[in-house]
Structures are given as C-alpha cells and as structure tokens.
Image (cartoon, rainbow, N blue to C red; front, top):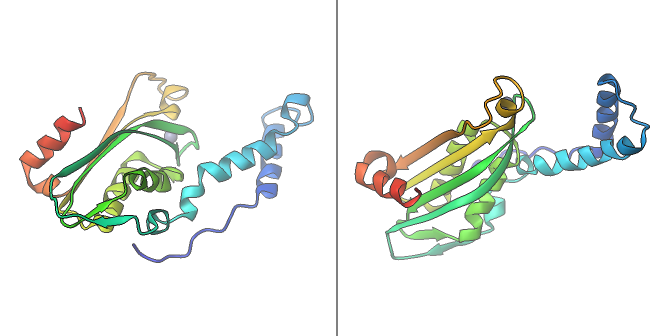
Length: 193
Ligand code: ZN
C-alpha cells in the first residue's frame, strides 16, 4: 500500500456556502423554512460520503491480519455498498462479494467490509472500485488469489439519462488463481450465486 498524502478534511463551511449558491442558481430560496439548514446538512453528508478518500486500506485494517494454516476459499457475500458516481455525484448502490484463498494470512471479516467502504466512500466508477478492493485485499493478505464482484444500480442511469430503472451493472476483478484457474473461479462464482 503506497504512502501518498491524504486529502485534508473538507471545509464544511465553504461547501455549505457553495450549496447555498447552488440552491439560488436552481431557482430556490435558500431562506425558506425547509432549506434553511440544507447547505450545512449537504456539507456534512458530502464529507461523510467521501471520507474514504481520506482513509487508506492499511489504516482501516489496523493490523487485523491473522496467521492461518488453511488454504481454502473464504467468501464474504451480500455486503451492501453505497458509493457516488464521479460523473454525476449521484449514488450507485448494491452488493459486493469477495473471495480469496489464503496462503498463510487471513483478514478479520469485518475488515473486509471496511476496506470496501474505504474505496466506496469516494467519488468512484464501479470498475475502478472493483479493482481497488481486489488489489487491496490481495496486498493485505498476499493471497494466492482474490475475486471480487460488484452488482450495482446507478441512480444517474435510473432517474436521469436513459431512465433504465431495472438495469444492474456487474463488474468483477479476478487476481491470481481466480484468474488463472477456471475451477477456482467457478467455485467462487457458484458460492456467491
Ligand atoms: Zn453517473
């Protein structure tokens, strides 16, 4: 996990000011009752929804890596995820499944979800999110293989644009034996069905 400087905490006051301007530009009256506190709320929400860009997988892992002799497949599935598409700042959400075959190290199970959120709570595209989660798990565990599948619905597609409400985007990243060995990949895919 490379060491790069993390972005600073966002200035929520500044964001609130920008949101107030946005409301005016949209023809709204930011002084009316329902909107009075909206800029501050949006600023808080945006800071939360992007907090992953101020985290590193190593930081969220906090050394929750354990030695294990076994080398069978570990699968965690139906992990809910929420992210923001970087093209429209609209949510995409869905579920994720992760599998890996440990060589000698396993990862605390709740930490897998934390690694996922570390990458999901950013401005993202689903393809990159999928790869980043797979690579982070590979790097943390030195597993012989890792598989990650995301199935998400994108609000930018559902409520605007082509308005396809039932489309689901599926992305996968397969590393090591999950990529090289058809049997391993099939085992993973059947376990997450
Ligand atoms: Zn989008």
